[in-house]
Length: 154
Image (cartoon, rainbow, N blue to C red; front, side):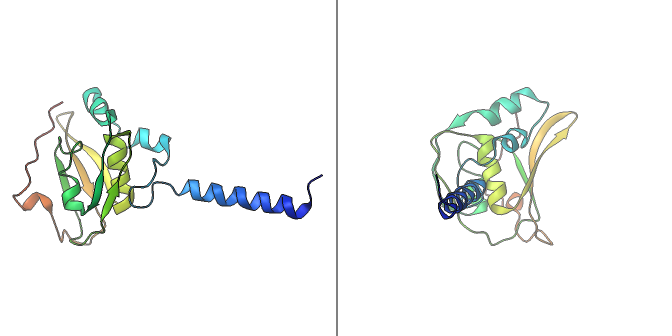
C-alpha cells in the first residue's frame, strides 16, 4: 500500500511535469508546442500555400533578431508585410530536426508575441501580415529597401 505522503509526492511530480510540458514552445523557439494550434495557424483555402507551409525541414537559427529571422531559409520564400513592429527585439533561436514552415512561423509568433495572417488579393494569398504590439511602426523592415521579398507565387 502506498503511503499518503508518497502519493502526494507523486501527484506533485506529475503536476510539475504537466506544467513544464504545457509551456513548451513559449521560450526561444522551444519545443513544438500544441499540434492542433499549429495545424490551424496561417490556415488558408489555397492548397499550394498550405502545402508550402507544411513542408518540413531541419533548421538552426541562432540568436537572430526579428528583422533577420524572416530572411532565413526555409521561410524566406514568400512576402511578409510588417506592422507595429518594435525596433528592439530579443534574440530568437530554434534548432529542431523536423519542423514545418508553418510551425517555424508559429514559434516566431509565440516568441515575439506577434499576430500573423494570410492577406488575400482577388481571392488569392498575397502575403503574410505580421503584426506586433508597438503603438506605432517604430521599425518596418518593408521600408528598409535591403530585403528582397518575392510576391507569393505558389
